[in-house]
Length: 215
Image (tube, rainbow, N blue to C red; front, side, top):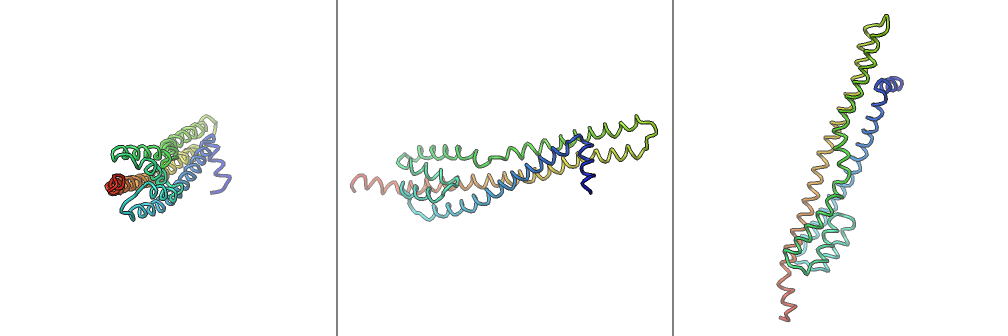
């Protein structure tokens, strides 16, 4: 397939193929960015989970240290919130940690709406490009002495837009579902850290109360 033929196909769809190419580039950019983010977040988040699991008891100082070591991971905000509100009761602290997770969640699935939009938009744009191409193909019938191959060839060229749109949608759907699964795994890590923190603060609570009472 030569460049001249590709340009011919794009012109045949009145530029819709250019828009589809832009959508493909955007989908690949979002996919690569999010794949890299989730790979790093899951690997480093697993180390945070192991670090929290390595403590029998946790206090505000240990939580603050773990939050600092987590850097820019989602777990950092959760551990920092736990350190700031460690003196609260279990129910109040659990509410604070749930609130922290809700604030973190939009940052985790950022950009996935773009893939979701492309999955829906690409086939529709492809169909639109094919309809425009059909107009060009059947306009040949109005010309005197037209050749039948001109119409059939035009129809074949017009269908390229639909095929391109469906192809982009299939790639986008596979990437979207894979990334959604990564979002679920990150949220599971956060919920695991939340449960571990609550359990270890509860384990340390009797000792802290005894110290406060002078026993």
